Image (cartoon, rainbow, N blue to C red; front, top):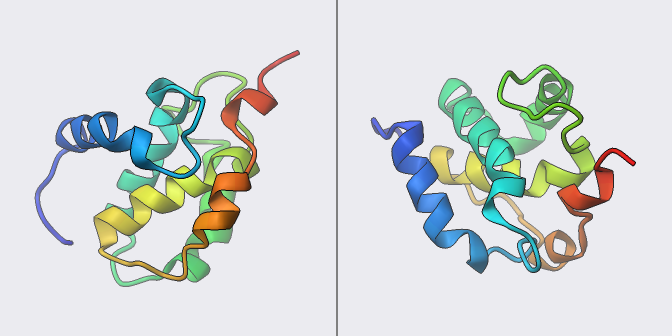
Amino acid sequence: MADNRTWDQEDLWWRENFNSRPYASGYTYDEFRPAYRYGFESGRHNMGRNWKDVESDLRTGWDKFEHRPAGGSAWENIKDAVRDAWNRVTGQRDEVDVDKMSQASSPKSSRNT
């Protein structure tokens, strides 16, 4: 899906479609927004690579992502949203396990206590 969409355009799409995602039940868009942005930006820079090839790098990069909120979610809690955005921008649909995604932990579970 190599096109010229901007993050602002993508942000609007995710805001409108977030509730349809299996991992979104009970959460707000803003809880996953940084993950969507990370997936979007990473996907635009890694065209041609698949999720299995980049997940380890993305996991490492998440802690350094400039738009990640202070004390933001751990990788395990947001990786499904990152992968969702990655797949959307790259056009890949690589073996996403919707049942597993819906059972994943949420960003709320990693908030500072």
